Amino acid sequence: MFHTSTQRSEWILKDVESVASIRKKSHDFAIEEVKAAYTRAKDHRKINFISADEAAYIVCHFSRQIPKICKLFSPNLPVRVAATAIQYFKRYYLRNSVLGHPPASMMMLCFFAACKAEEVNLSLSVLVRHASKDPNLERFVKDHELHLMTELRFHIVVHHPLRPLKGLVMDLLQASRTHGEIGATITGDALHSAAEKTLDEWMHSDLLLLYPPSQIALAALQCAGMTCQQQDIVSTYISGLCSDIGKTTQLLQTLEDVKVLGGAGIQMTEEKDIKTLLGRLQSCRNPLMDPTSAIYIAQQKEKEEALAAERTRRQEEWKYEYSIFTAQIRAFMHLSHPVQLYCLQQCLVCHLTTETKRRQCRPRSLGSNF
Figure: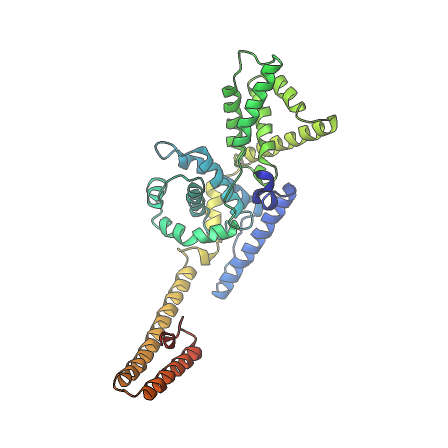
């Protein structure tokens, strides 16, 4: 149930200003990280950073690509997969910035995670083969899947307006038939289809970060009533949902706010030049998260060298301990007196325990076998 879900307690924010404030803080923090990365590399270049609003537009742009991925497969993947992927994508970039991990790769990662959450059988190799030309995407998804889940706080279930919409349409038709208001010119399928089309557009906005799914579905049904020229019937139904005039007025105002915010999200995606913006994004991304940057390549080389040195050190330590262990076992095999056997056993346990504590590099002591 939505009212007891983590979506209601963790992912429904107070107002539009709260969403904008969190994004601004995340974006400013990412800018400081980029500056620090270049400073550590002794690179004092001047960077023309994109604004927080432009970053939000980039997120909206990529969220609009997610439903297109569903249509690349035959049969098409369910709409709920795209809806869940979009919410994962928006939740991730609520407290992260596009200056970090590339949004195109994160979009595919969110889509793959949504397939798992919605129990749609789609392997990673099939997804990469049909939906991307990036040769490094499969490795990126495998390396960053846990990172995505951590940023989502492992809140996997997403409640969408699609389910309450179906119930609202059925309830509306039943109430209308009871009062003899429904005509032969309109059917439940027409209302449902019109409302679903509205929700398809609204899902790219921030509505699910601000309002319960049932209110979003009711606002979409109100729009569908206008589209199907049944606004009087829908208005009467909505008015009958509340017990007094005050609550009805408050509900109608909420529905108007939902429609305004949903429409604002659609309008925003038509005002920017996305190609220019993505070009600017590439020039100001965090170099430590950009596999094509010289700083990233140098850092990876240092990590590989450090890992190789650590492996060599551990191999030498194992060889040293193995040689001691082998020599003492050989001596052990040539002893026959019980007292001598016991004394050697205790010496082995003491020696190996001391060596393990000194280096702190082994998961268990060889002495525990005795």
